[in-house]
Length: 605
Ligand SMILES: Nc1ncnc2c1ncn2[C@@H]1O[C@H](COP(=O)(O)OP(=O)(O)OP(=O)(O)O)[C@@H](O)[C@H]1O
Image (cartoon, rainbow, N blue to C red; front, top):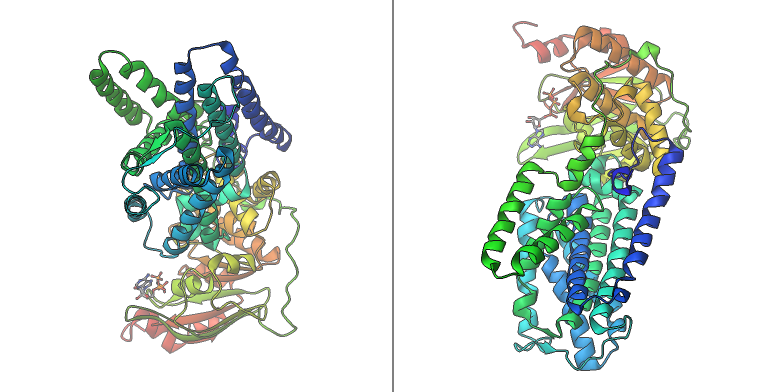
């Protein structure tokens, strides 16, 4: 089986044993290096210089498309700014060579650094603004290309007339000048592919794929989203900068009008989408395919007709393979999801995974202490200053009529929303002002009322993300093994390879539970996990929640299903209109007149 079909997005395939997965992990970089070594012999075949240049261009686009994909394909931050970073590399190298007589090879690290610095400066601002995602991010990066282009033209960097480089000596790396460019691009492509592969199979890559599918859910599961996006952008820009540096000398005369255009970003987007953005090899396949098509159809006499034909081929390819050539190929080999139902909790053994660090709360201190917690949304007071203590080891029911602030409480405690006022302390340590991923890392996990799985990852990968980030496991193999134990615990082991879309609501709710548990939390916040389930599914879920408590977790349980509340909770608190209305044992509190009035209205109460 080929190397391409073995590697899966983010983590090794669920069905592979750790040993086989590890073997494939080692084989992929060796295969990339071996292919690079073989291709390095091409200049010695004595082909005409034209072929060196054609292969140079193919590899040049491999570097540009693959580097674009590290940010945009993996994390989903679609950038139209790759021309700006590529252009920064071109102009850095060109100016260092033409004005300061730097040897060409020395300029490449500086080109990478300059492109990365500009990228990080942009990302440090843009990635902080929650609203700048999707098309807004794409437009903003396009604007950056135009701004940098304008600056370059109107400064001595270009001066309006371009930078001639014909006098700059080309290092003697290959037997001819054209083969030198080919070998330089080959080296850059090998390094870029190794980096793209390394990221894809690492914890970092898993975090980027989680950001792609649901950035807020990823953050709440412990992924440091801001930092990861910055790293991905810096790496992407640095590689584009190197490609630019090499291309400056290849062109031998650089002009801003040809560099800072929409052509570069559009071409890399097309190549990556054609090959497949969810795999390190996808953009390279797209780059080679499009360069090959351009050569085959536009080099002869009928260039215009050839271009039109390429357009038709690309439209057809993208229509019939919307996830790219590679994904289409891999899907044929993926086993169809099995129709087996989830196992009942009674058949499930608790997983044997190492426990997290012991709690540090002092004796008598509640696990979670919330004081005066307030949250307003543009005038809507969702929480109006509530005090809640959650004791170590209890199941605390959080009840209240619709709109009373229960989900907001969970959202604020988990860091999804910033509180408008009040304090939160977990195990004696304040959580105020901490980003959601740090709150997750401190031992708090949550589920969502409407399940929010990572749609493009398998069920196993969804849980492995929680194991890696909440549970602080670096090695994807270990994460995958532990994730499997949580799937067994929740009865989803037969669904490990399925996509969340293939699950019914019951299974999706249990996947939420498995993800929450996989980080070995000391406090689990469950937001209406029983909503929408049938009576027998509710019985399964109640049994499972009991077993979660038996594992040593403390639970805050938001629920409307009264029989489950009565069966499970040690204590309840009732919210009404964002305020604490009552607290105590469920059977007693639910009989209080003020609670019945809040639920049923005065007349019915
Ligand atoms: N993101 C938001 N933007 C604006 N208003 C919000 C937002 N989230 C919650 N609210 C408002 O805050 C109040 C409390 O909502 P919340 O979802 O916390 O209630 P709840 O008790 O969980 O209700 P339910 O039982 O229906 O889920 C409601 O009036 C709701 O409309």
